[in-house]
Length: 212
Image 1 (cartoon, rainbow, N blue to C red):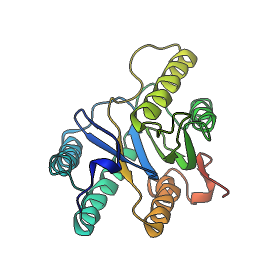
Image 2: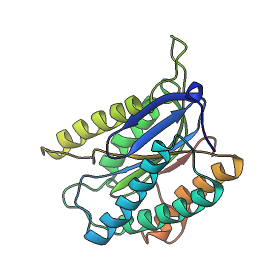
Image 3: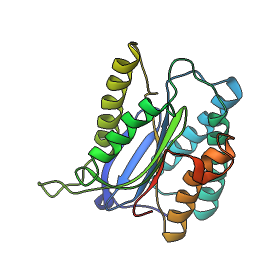
């Protein structure tokens, strides 16, 4: 499936390409700044290579490509959840509250907040960027930058530490349809239990769903 330039809100490319389309609901995740073990770096690089390929060909993945990509991403995410990070634990109540505040603060300002899950070393958030007073959509890159900048600064202040908190990159993907929307929410919901953090998904305090 190829897309038209008229549908694009923003197209950026660092090590991972990001394409924001009009009126999309977008699933985003990023992790703390730490070095991945070699096998996990390979998985991450394969995901980046796939996204670069789609960007170069100016198209959106097919159903089969999408299914395989998501399988790989879910495996990668489950592995990430098992890693322990020194110094910062996002599921510490004080740290989680900083992130929850930031997510909620920009709700109905920059985006509609649909869902999020805060894990010990990474986060998932589901949003729909809004239109500003100029009639233009807020750019996803700016939204992520604001969230990362505020939370990193505040976390470092609270922990009396210096240095990076978040990795530079983030992964994002648009929601394709209603089924995909609820699949993503279910994944967020079950992520803590699958990672062994709680026995029952309902026991995880740092999951939010709009009107849920």
